[in-house]
Amino acid sequence: MTEASLLLLGLWLLQVGLVAVFAHRLRHLRRVLDQAPQPPESGWPELEVVLCLRGADACLPRLLEVLAQQTYPAPWRLQVVIDHETDPAWAWLQPWRDAQGCAWTALRCQNLRELPQHGSLKCASLRQAFADLHPSAALVVLLDADIRFAPDGLERCARVCLQPGVGAISGNRWFSPPPPTLGMPGWSSWTRAVWNAGAVVLMTLWQIPWGGTLCVRRAVVDAGDWTALLKRGLCEDTGLLAPLRRLGLTYRFEPSLLMVDPDPAQPLVPLGRWITRQLLTARLHHPAWGLVALHGLGSAVVLMVALLQAAWGAAVAYELGCVGLLVWIEHLVQPGRRSHGLGWCLGLLPGQVVDGVATLMALLTRRVEWRGVEYAVEARSPSGVRLLRDRWVRERLVRERCVSER
Image 1 (cartoon, rainbow, N blue to C red):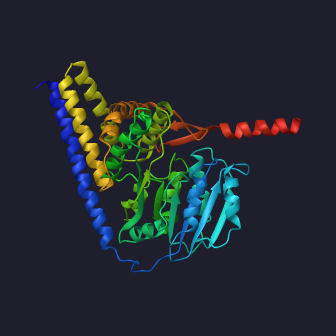
Image 2: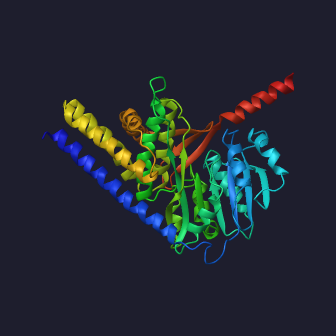
C-alpha cells in the first residue's frame, strides 16, 4: 500500500472509532432517559423560557404556536428580548401579547436596552433577560427562533436537567434534506447535512452544547461565571463547560431534543460563512477546539495528498467508506428512517472541502458578521468579540432620516 493509502485507511478507521463511541454514548443516554422518573422525584419546578429575537424569522410563528400549546404541568413564563423597538419581530409577537388560553403563565416582551461594546447582541440580550428572571424559576430554557420544538419539549428538558449532577442539557440539529432528483440535485443542502452529521458526533463526544435548545439550572445563572463570559462572548453555548465544572455540575446531550430540519440550505458561499461562524464559536470558547480543527483539516488535507499522488483507488474507497459512516450515523440518529445514500454521495466531497476551508477560515478570521452585525474577533485572553457596526441600525436610521426630510 502507498503512503497515501495508509493515511486514508488510518483516518477512516479513526472515524469508525469515533462513530462507534458515539453509538455507545447514544444508547447510554437513551437508556438513562428511559429510567428517569416521571414526574421527577422533586416534582415539576417552575421554569422560564428565554427567546432572543432579531428580525422577522419565518419560523417564529411556528415556534410561538408550539410554545402556546406546551404540556408542561407546572407554571412557566416566556421572556422575549427583541433587538430594538422597530424590529419586524414585534409584528409576529403582537397577536400573542393579549392571547388567551396560552400555556405560559406570563409573557414579557422587551427591547434590548443597551448596545454592548464587547460581546454579541445575543449575549447582551441574554444578560438582560437573566437579570429579569422571575425569582421562582428553577430552570431556564433558551430557544432559537428557527427550531422545531415538540409540544412536550419543556417536560423533556426538565426531566433530564433535574437528574443528579446535571447542570445543563441541550439537543442538537439534524438536517434531513429531500432525496436528490435530476431536476433538483440539492448540492448545498446535502453539503450542510454532511457537515452537520460529523458535527453531531463531535459535539456529543466532546460535550459542546447547542444553544438552539439549551436548559440550565438557575444556580448556573445565579453563580455569575457564565454571565461574565457573556460580556465578551460571541455565543452563549460553547463556553458553558467551565462555569458548570466550577459548580461541580456536568453538561449532557439529550437525544430526545434532537431537532430534525427538512428545510433547504442557502447557497454554498453563505453556507460556508455560516459553518465558519459555527466553528469560530468553538475556537473562541471551547477547550476541545484543537480536536475540532484537527478533524476539519485532517480529512481535507489527507484526501488532497492522496489525489496529488494519484491514489485514485484509495481515494474512492475512502469516500465510499465515509458514505457508509454517514448512513450509520443517520441510522443511529433516526432509527427506522430510509437512508438516502445518493444524497450522502452528492454532498460528501463538497462537505469535506467546505469543512476544511471553514476550519481554516475560523482559525484565521479577525472579523465575523452575524445577522447584519460586524464583530472584531479578539484572540487575547479572555477571547471574545467587539461590536464594530450594526448594518441594520444604520439602514434604519437612514430610512428614518429620509422620512423626516419629506
